View 1 (cartoon, rainbow, N blue to C red):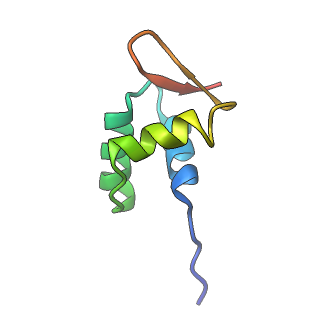
View 2 (view 1 turned 180 degrees about the vertical axis):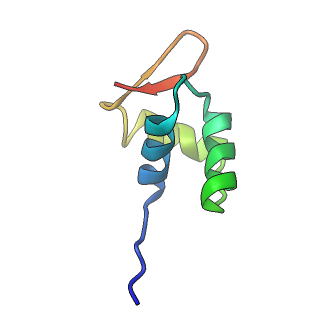
Length: 68
């Protein structure tokens, strides 16, 4: 039996890709907790968005994120 390990960066990326609208970090965190059963704090989501995913995402004036 093999187990696939998904990184926190991948969880954030997948959450944004499946969304039909821009999401705030708080909602990304909530979605990951509900769907992946993994707790990722808002501050950790923001850190991922501003660092690891900085070239893949955009933030609007309402502080909502989308994949580019």
